Length: 65
Image (cartoon, rainbow, N blue to C red; front, side):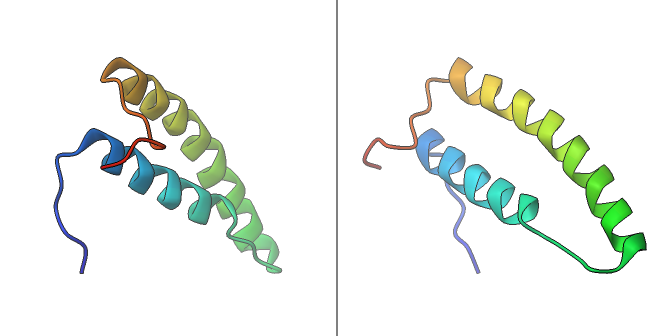
């Protein structure tokens, strides 16, 4: 189980890890490919909002936590 945190840099690191893992999902089944394509389009839009949020709060994933 993960631990809760309010550290903005750690939250950004966790979001980026989740985003990357979801974006690399693949399937050989056509129906799953369609579903994954839709999910990835919406996830990419959400990522844009998340990155603006992290910019607004001054998060830096490279900073030591």
